[in-house]
Image (cartoon, rainbow, N blue to C red; front, side, top):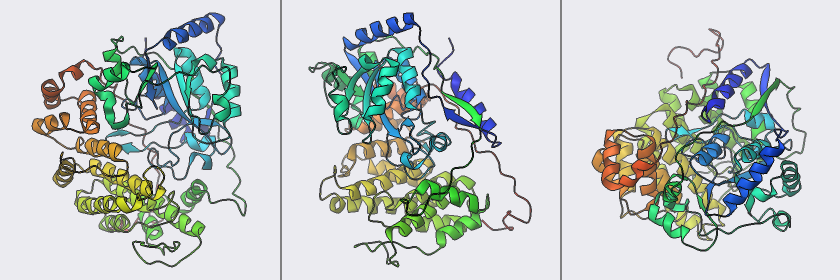
Length: 549
């Protein structure tokens, strides 16, 4: 049987077809047909899974593909999982899609939120690379998930990330006849759904084992399985499936995903008085800036900055309405990201990006705070400018120093603290891209066992720092030190990297420190995301002069 990755090649063909502007992808909004025999088998298999123990996977197997993608869900089930935790949002034109973050910038090269985009615009989002692999991927619709769930008799944990989705979710559960598949629902945005008598919710045995990468620790998995309840929740199912002695990797083809339709007419411009829409603002910029013009992008970054007054701001700037300040931050962030994509490591480009990292634009709304500096850091990593490591390190240390003050009201509720943590995550991803001695030295020192964990987002920033270090050239002694690190987030990240990207030194390190991990199946190799189609530049019009960025 062909593997569950066959359809990715088809999507790439579709993307190439859409490059001409005549055809684009569209979500399939009808369920695949199902025979009576298939339906009977599915409900019987669901009943068997519900008998437990149940292995649920958080956002799919993200080591194999971008989180919350059909590839990640299918691989989680291939690796022995029983069900999937999924995050549901709604696009601007009302289509239910699966995407965790409120913001687009961690997983994609988009700006703003899913709610700012139409379904077609969501499908066109290019995934962002992080730590040597795609962080995101083609954003699936809820209907595509239901097709996969019925095909594989998978269980579901529904996390509705915004209010107002319950009625439509319930209609789809009816249409797909999958109420018995649902074993958990996050109540915050779904109180009515949680009380529906058709649901038979089950209990988790322990808090999510994905926190601190305890899902890569066999002892932690065994301890969780001994607790009362029916389910455990992991980010990667391979260790738990091995502990449960489940069959090894069994790829199954994925059903329909998307279809090609003629290019629709562009949406009308936003009306006066509508809330600021970052995605629409970026789309307008893309139409105005000459393609491939680094000079135009530099001018966009270096223009005047307007921001609301803020105590303790990095620099004094003229005060303007928050909407205007947000627009300028988005412009600078988009321009920085485009400069990284152009790949021109000119001194003026590097200087402008480093200045944004040193002095990101503050904003009282955490959605925009320091976003330009964060994406400038990612651009420097993408350019491979190793000389920028000291700038990135200084910015990261400044973020960490501010966390005690930013998090004074509590890490779980203080959005200022999370804005700083988001910037730090982008900085760590950039340091992972810069494979050089300076980055390796800093990351190794930051992961020293005696180094205190950050007060905000400590576990996942430990994980990001470890993943960044594992992009560097490391000795077998370095690898063994990571594999026995006292922090489970570091150990688990090292195990995953050594299993999925093996070489002789990594195999020897695993054999010495975690020999059991040699039994785990490696993640299937995926092709890199497609490059954007080349843009032809007419000489003397858009081409930069000799020596210019």
